[in-house]
Image: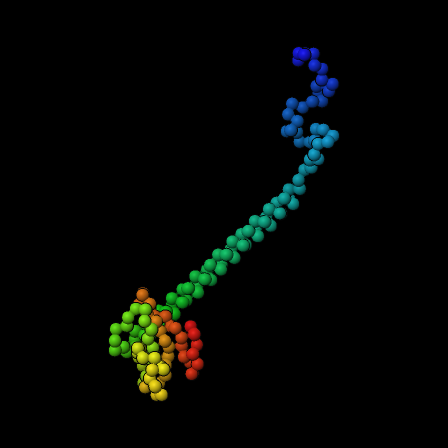
Length: 154
């Protein structure tokens, strides 16, 4: 059959050229197309945006808190290192070794290789301050501090 012989039962004025591009359903069984409430759409988008950015800011705040703690730890190591280097030492400290910081009776500090347990019954100092460890950057890490007879791990 030729093209001229086929007769379309639908009137030409009722047929669209591109029915998929129409703003409305073009058949009885077509999907219902309703206009969107743009205020509702924008509100949902803003809520999602706020939640995502709030989560990202919280992560940054936690990272900042960690950096602050690390900076305070370095600052404490510097202060302890200054005090230890101001103390009397009769030897050259070796990296990655532990030493013991004591307070003399006159209030000055002294760094020793001898632990409090190795002195015997009587320690020749006013008090034991801390066990310290020399790090590779020549700062000191406090392993523990003894206060009033109790050992406190640091």
